[in-house]
Image (cartoon, rainbow, N blue to C red; front, side, top):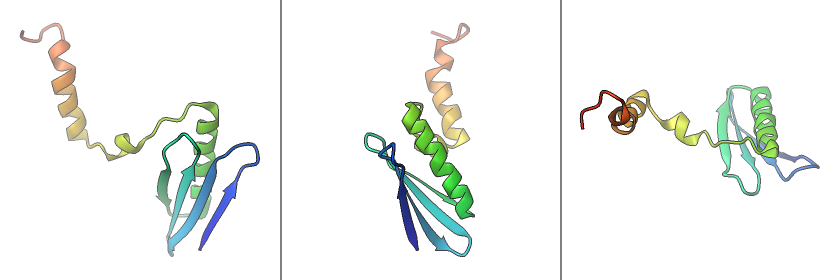
Length: 93
């Protein structure tokens, strides 16, 4: 079952899909922003997340979390080692 709603004051659309007994998937869309998708255990959690995404997009405070959610700690530490450590005071030239 899929259901969508659009807020009258914005162009944000969220669609909810029941994936199985214990999973609801939400996709939040707004013109000028990448589509955001996340899966939750309850529809209530999905609706709360959709509202939070809408508020962030409306305020201009939205930051895509896709890269952050898919980056492992190992990858993050390697990026730090390569990008930040050489700039430290005690780094070898």
